[in-house]
Length: 115
Image 1 (tube, rainbow, N blue to C red):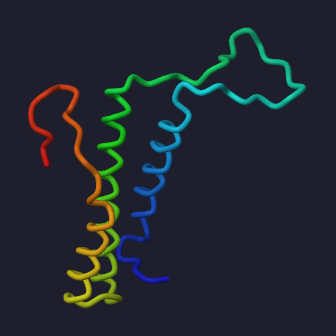
Image 2: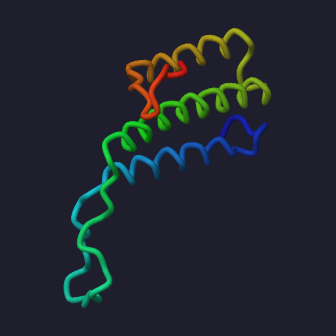
């Protein structure tokens, strides 16, 4: 395993990304309870459905977190001696290019997207 300057904590950013994606995926969908288990009347039939503007903000947040993860990973490898300065620049550029297809959505509060 390479890196280690940050004790591999950039993985926590990836965990956050995955959790937000999970929340988006299950938003408003029927909850699958195990067959044969009685549900109480207080238990919901559907997951909470986030409004579209909130989902849009979640998606923007995911993009920003992906950028943060990429920067943390590339800097980690540079500081740990796994990458030199040239490979740092090249890999950073390549990794960021992989997520550039994202099109920022207008923020729910109006104004500029900020990037």
